[in-house]
Image 1 (cartoon, helix red, strand yellow):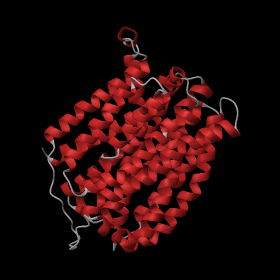
Image 2 (cartoon, one colour):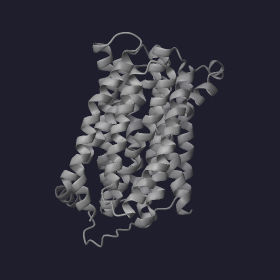
Image 3 (cartoon, rainbow, N blue to C red):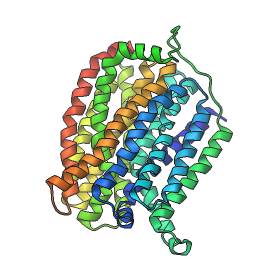
Image 4 (cartoon, rainbow, N blue to C red):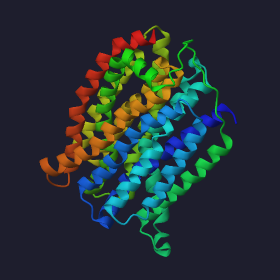
Length: 420
């Protein structure tokens, strides 16, 4: 199949991964009532159960991504997380659902390291911006779109649930998992493994762990600064992803489906707009000789995303909250779109998968593991009432914004040197 067809499939799989990842956010209220969960337990399902394994499995999996057949690895990963999603619909206790969320995390940890590596080998360096941006735009598009798909699926299966003997939230998870199993089979049948390409002309293939450690030793401070900024971003944004639909239900009386539509629509429009603007600005500014353009735009997006999150948490009305969600989607898309391009710009071919996994570790091990749980803890111990979770979201966003800015300022000069 053609290379753009493969990019399209990878985009679709990445989009589905967000739907399955955030399904519990859409289903938070019915799951809480059905399994008698606390906010802290729900935060653990959003974050710790998914984030820790997603991050910790990423690097060892990416080691094989940089050496083995990436199409096979992607196929197995998609099938695994889809099976775990189906099985989540049958969970009867918190711990069963916790373990199955771990299965979703392990499967999803495969996708982005392999996809970024595959796309880099399908296109020359000066032609990678568009396909890479298309793939990574799923992160911001489906940051909101996942809630639309989840809400729509919940609405569609609810009338069927009584006849099938399932609660609607269970049937929603089963339906989403079946779609993933079908898509994994299609990808395995139609995609072919591309040859690996490294334009740098280096004699090292970086396929061994020792070579990877040596490379990180030479560029460690650059990636450390970038990943600090990414971790701060991840904590703030994952807090929003996990709890904003619940805020709309508790503070404004919306139903779970309507809350998903409101949040999802605003975030989707903001993410799509950012997906067009940020890579275009980066490419144009870089061609004009500004070698640190991508870092500057990354920083601007991260800071204004943090401000939008604070405003979202304290918004007194639904329209103001939805407007803040749009701004978060627009500015937050800078991180999701530009960081993979940074990795492609400076990393050797057989290190791209592991560096992408390290980036996802910073965004998810810290972001997913800390963000939702920290927000729930602050909500339960610092605030009271229906708006408590919103106040906690604002606190987390305010704390993370200076951390993001500091990391990017420190990374700027080292990125210029590494790119040269």
